[in-house]
Length: 363
Image (cartoon, rainbow, N blue to C red; front, side, top):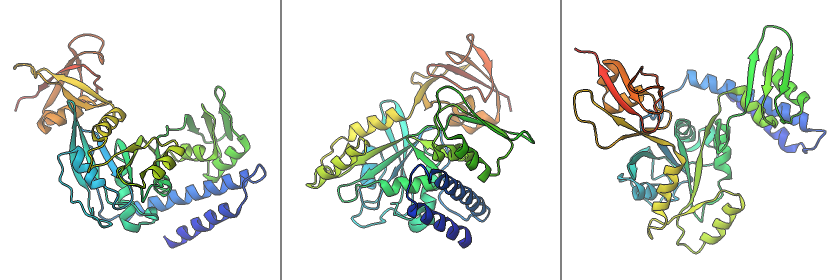
């Protein structure tokens, strides 16, 4: 895809040389729309000819991705907070594959993924960057690990953005209804503010000429483009500044504080803030407790801990795949139903404190 890549680089260069002001914001907005459209075409083409790479199956436990430059201590962090034994080395690219571990915090479990170090140019495939970032689209939390020698996360955030990952952001509050005719109508709800002519121009760049678009928040061109594409993922993130026992730590910490990233200072060698890190991870990923009540046996004393938003099917898979294959129905008593022992199906979403009994077909 050299032609698309070259065109994108030319458009990015044009943005860099264009001074931003009121007179040029429409021009820049249209260029950003063209870049986003070309990147979407490139992504669709690459999927058709995609080869093997990293693949992480979504499990019942939430997945946490450890991301950062090479040799900042991700493997040491993994070993400190989990039961994993990731290889630790003092050289770049020690971790050449994904190393998983399970972190236990109180009565909850989290799957921690130690990912290869990310270098600048990852979105172009440098250092297996595209494979690494593709994994992150399916995690529940990104933990960015930095150290006093590699403490500027700007390029990492840009690499994530280039691949459609938005950290610590929420999806745009907007709806799009495509039509066969009637033109383009962009309306607002509440106190949202935007430049309607600019957003109309961006819409047409995407080939949207007949549609009703309702905006429920203020819109910058970038946020609006994300909403039009509809393929962005929104993932919470926390930042770690590792090796906090080194002399260079303070300068790096103050820099990250100036970016309002609230970094957690850690030191594996000094065992500093390891428990705090576990607490922060658990606090960012919402979990619920479900009590399994067998119909013909004593109830489990300990509840099953699952990801918030889990369905009856998710709970069944966590017990045994046979529970899904032979599933007949389930009964629930708790907040997710209107009355005790209400019969539900596999797609019913459970809530914290629910008591669940699963009935299976015989044979």
